[in-house]
Image 1 (cartoon, one colour):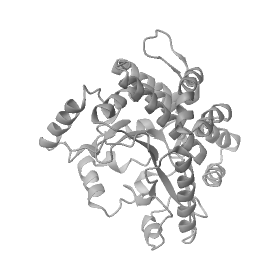
Image 2 (spheres, one colour):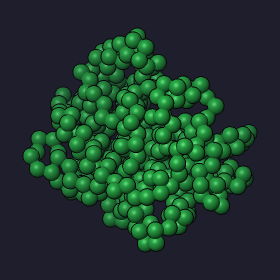
Image 3 (tube, one colour):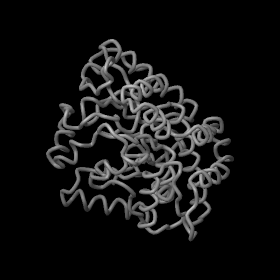
Length: 368
């Protein structure tokens, strides 16, 4: 399998799936064509469709550092909001729309996505969720696989920090990230397998392609995956963030974590090998309880609070963040812990009056 893991290391790119909304009602609007029907290009990065016409994706260019990503993301959000308002629309960011129904959404006119609906049926149609992805540049194929293996253990913590979808179809779900179990209906999602190296990864993917199970590796929608064409590790576990500063803080955490794991790989240190069933249970607990979850760390026998585990991770990542120039952005994780993540904020607003309109107004107002 061809790959482009040739560096530079630790470049950063971010993709965000955003809601297209009617500006008056804040209902989802099947209006991606109106957003894209313009000769006005964003100053950098891309604006592109997703599976449903009420969803758009913004994607930064590969950036040399997190501060550059922060500027590009803010510019992209402003760009799509300005384009939307020209058409009586608005933009919001959350892991789910609190009350929209998938039955009311239209699939985009694109053969890849129409093919997904043909292959997956209801499973594809009901995927009315919004995620964020972080790409980090790698300088070698073996390094990329080692880093992907190492990030697996941290996926539950990322889910807990980024949880931002406590409502679905008009009511509280009892989860802080409803997006996680909704998207789990897809095949080839969740925690990836552990690979023994590049040759193992390439051979296993190629076997699926040869058997006609997938067209290519991009049909593996795991929480973390190598992206050979882009030469990156892609972390896909998180809900879309209402506040752009939370997106940026998570990007800073991920690139610092990747650097930590890559350097351990260079030194020949083995990465933890937490059994799959324990990682998967951690993943569930993170989606269920968010920042209040208690997770089982590798090699330990007792669960520990997410806030405690996050504090330990931030201490370990501090030197790497300084070297990468994103120490200020990484500090946004501490703000997220102090003030609450998106799910905590949504629940506080909704539980005050039980008013979905008030909640949507809050999401739109803080998605800038």
